[in-house]
Amino acid sequence: MKLKFYAFTLAEGATHVAHWNNSRKIAFTLAEVLITLGIIGVVAALTIPTLMANHRRQVAETRIEKFYTTINQAVKMAEVDYGDMTQWEPYVKQYEKDENGNDDKTKELPNTEYWQKYFLAYMKTLKVEPYGHNSSCLLAYLPDGSVVNFANGSIQFYPSAKDFKFLVDEDTGKIKNNMEYSGVKYFTFLFYPSGTEAGNKYHYKKGVEPYKWNWDGTKEMLLNNNGIGCKKQVSNERAYCTALIQMNGWKIPKDYPLRF
Image 1: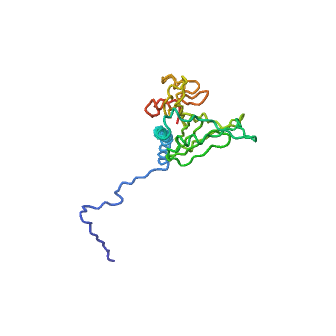
Image 2: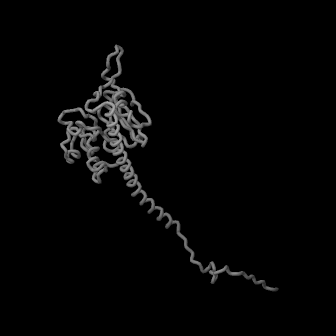
Image 3: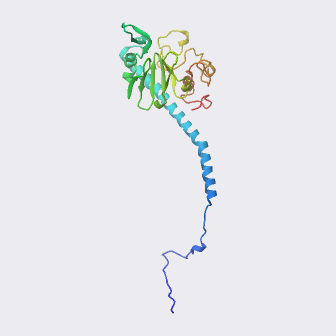
């Protein structure tokens, strides 16, 4: 019986042949794989919420400042058409009519004509609509995904329209702000350029500004006012939070008292 020998030619540039049984074999046990995946999961659980919160903060900062610029550009354009803003027609509350044709003071409506004339005509919007029944709220949806709630002279800005939510007062049936969202999901502004009251110092002859009614000019008051300060527990809404952000160059301070 003759033995057959097989031959082969090395590839060009090859100098030697490595046999399989001389190669290093690497393998992981199931336990090692599970431990690795567990570590990855723990790291993700710790970092992802922080990353998401930081993203929400950045979106809020960018859109709040953009809204402030955009709406005050609208005010300037309206002044060209209607004169000095301190001489504009005052905001007049609107009501549904009763069966006798008189105002039903329990059923307020938004003054759409006012907001359309002086603001919305000069702003790019996707949609404008009143909010619900028995409410003075007029909603304007903006192209960047935010929404503005115009109500009387007060303005609530939601950086993300999907966060918009109102509550219904069980006693009166009227719609009211969700106070827990204040300073986190919506931010309060005020337009009252003609008001000469002492508390209107920071709004007199000004366009749309972060809410500063009765403010004494200090950071301490913005943070500590029990009624509308930028802190967790207040008796009203956290209206001063917007001014606190403006004071910090439209950046949410690192020591901001509320979580995003």
